[in-house]
Length: 256
Ligand code: ADP
Ligand code: MG
Image (cartoon, rainbow, N blue to C red; front, side):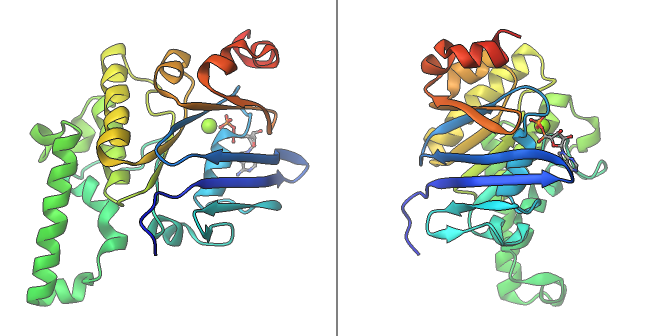
């Protein structure tokens, strides 16, 4: 395997649900090291696209590639293992888990030890557990969740819970991170902190970010590229400045 950051390529992807065409011939390329935003009205197909990339939905046509690996027919855990991490729009963390436990959930697919070997306290398994614990601590500190390490997720503010979910996704050691509406529902302070942390995930950790976001100010401030979806098709793709000037985008989305 090579260590060069991979391109994420979506090529001619279509998805239908019965009579509904949720995605029609969608193509986009996410450049390594970029923050790439997907915008578009409700129902445009943004979450469907994420579900296709992460292996939760099957395409009716088209392909998804991460570097030299075709993701299209793989299962979600295989896609995670190839370096595609995902934080969910609606948080799926177990309510009584601590911040530490919740971030640790992201490590499960990396654990070779398994519960039996850990239970037997084999030295290799204990050593591996220690490495996972250290990494989880690092991720919590990186996201400024260190002080909340032992707190229950259910007691946290909305913004902190969303950052724990990002931490869980980071714990999978992604090369490309998918974020579905990371600042939706956050207050201005929480959004600003998230925006800053996304920049440092990109700059400090070298992780490519593909995000769906409704907050246009945030998109324009942090995205290198923007792809606009409307009724399941790509109507524009370009830099934030190009997108803001695109007449079709203004008509379909920004104007509404
Ligand atoms: P967005 O995230 O852009 O708001 P979605 O991708 O969630 O849009 O949805 C796109 C369209 O596909 C919508 O009409 C939605 O109702 C439909 N859709 C999404 N997932 C499913 C599903 N599992 N079954 C049936 N229809 C779905
Ligand atoms: Mg959505």
